[in-house]
Length: 236
Image (cartoon, rainbow, N blue to C red; front, side):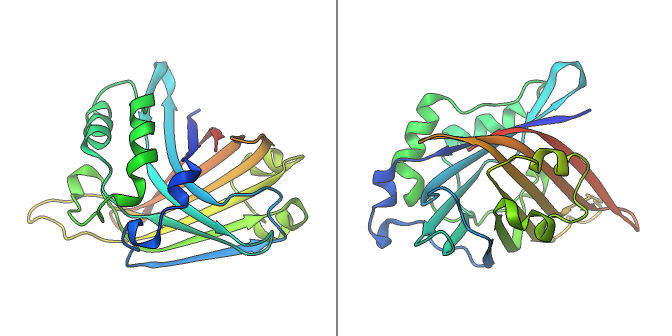
């Protein structure tokens, strides 16, 4: 059974306080946030999302890292935004190179320091490469749910979700819809159409949230969609 290790690192609060002119260019796709219930902890700031899929035989692979910003005015007024930006070459190139091996890339302390200093200045990701599994976002939907709203938000969820939700603090669902990239002549490549992730927070402290995550992909196959499911622990 596959497992996924997901780490979301909260970036320096000082970066969050930078002026609006220093922020990465807003992405050109629709993003919405729905809060079901209320957020029990403060999420405001900038976050780095790192996910690692683990496979039988000790093999692993990192999923595409993501940067997310969160503005929060109250327990009920929270807005999340995914930044579609180019990661520094010192991070992006080792990540992609490691995915051709049996062990996943992991961010180093130097990588995280660089992101703390540069995340708000990263340029938009404009050169999408189908062969590198790049995606073009159509829309992103965030849903933040407190325990009293789980039945409403996660009815009929993936296997294991209900068990993970029991006794948890809150959960975040992220649905990413993608537009197809132009297909090179003579090639047939199954492109990802959607990614749906559920992050169930079970413990928290001042700097980290931890729990279980469930990620499902849908790729365009020959006549029928191809589903892919991964799950495991995560840290935020």
